[in-house]
Image (cartoon, helix red, strand yellow):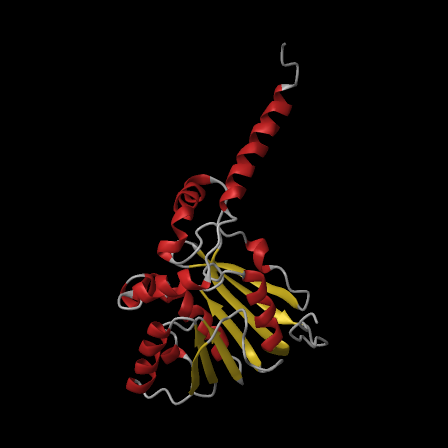
Length: 245
């Protein structure tokens, strides 16, 4: 039986099937234990590997935060690489899931006498223990592709930020096409080893009705990382959803 479908239809179908194949890669998830294990391995060398690659993005984010005031929450503070760059008028609180990373951050705070860092806590970003509307600025740098449930984390970032405050992300977001897209898909099965998702679409952070995207820009080096700045609605009163009885 001959195939009488137009060539344009067959081409569209092929593109659709290819897209499905790419999308299938995106369902891979990390659990909390895998994240802890990955960053326990990374802790001794983090500052000299990924930490070095991410330096420009961190500095750019902190420069913007320094122009503001009040309390700042850094989610995924890691070894504290960004902590010395915050100006003294800010009250900085950091959290991380990995105790090995936090130990290095505390050593940095002590060695550099960072008196504006008021707390470093081991905490799950998807279940923050801070009250609603606590921080003027909440920043998550190189975190969202690591966590098991990005939507829950975004909702928590919004919840603990004051109305009118800012939520800032610095992160890698994947692309479907080109050499970079191909490399990202090849890396995807190894998420549990490297500790982050190479395939991660930006739509996964656009989940909070209380957060309005103000700015999005590619960062050095090479535009691999993106900064996204959100403003929390002035009339918002974000609260953690009540548990079902």
